[in-house]
Length: 417
Image (cartoon, rainbow, N blue to C red; front, side):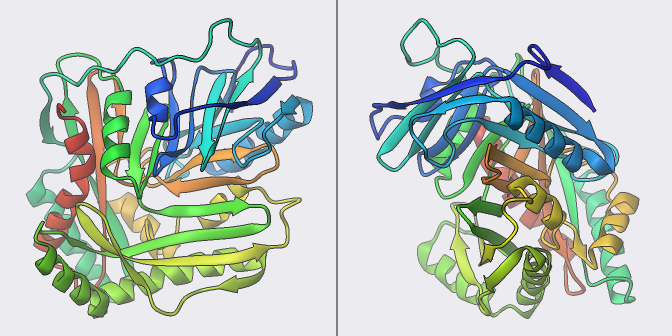
């Protein structure tokens, strides 16, 4: 575990005050290109910039090491919160590796955070209060000269891997495995991540648009939200690509809701989440039938699992995320067997793709999504990710088409306006 902290043992002095913001204004327009972070949905959420404190962790203890660091930070912090909303006061943003090895994880406290929730807005500053009033930042410039190339595996090689997984499932080794692939985009100059963030936020308002330490995207899947004693998790599994024709898409949605293959895949994922949350809840609600979530590019079978937590004093939202990760939605069933198979045949390093990403407050409440529809930006290069749930009935060509549909949000976001 490594640290990067101004005055490592000094307490953070944190102040949150109300802001009078135009409800129609984009929070991303206020963010400068200085280690930006974001967590937005339907225009509300949190954005921030700068680094007041940071910890990087890795390996099997990446979550517990980060949780310990955070509890120590909170215990020393001096907080003046004049707003008292979820996301005000001292908050951290995190992004965690999918697997125990390799990969690094990060938890960061921004110097400045702007939040909005309904008709309330606020600003949190760590350290000295800025001398200048809040103003619109220098706008991001569109990526130039973007070209795309295959990542670790080309289409034919990836379909061969899918066929291998199907044969192992048919042989009874496991019930489901989630296989991912990557695509590499290269621009002619370093990419300002605020550009794709703004386009994802406006194009996919029902998703959670995020960025932490180079990993960005618009995820439709909430791994866990804990707020004032209530916990929720949105499970997605079972996908079909939209055609753009509303009448045809309604028929496809009805077919998805009746698909035995997709319903089976979805049931695995819901059961995985419910079993992991149950020890932390005094009561739970697990709907028997999923609904169809309509997004601009795809439709998903979705289920919202909810519960009342009984151990909020000792278990934070980050620890709940650890308990849930990896769910069957991003790993498979049985999950240990599926994750082992991913390491054996997937042929790439996921890094923080499909790991938990989100934010956490000083009291342990927070929101953690699954880093899907995502990419990792580094200078002028962007590595895009997409994954598909493979079961016995899976067809490699159909899974390839599904993965291509899941690349669309980030791929389009890298284009010009």
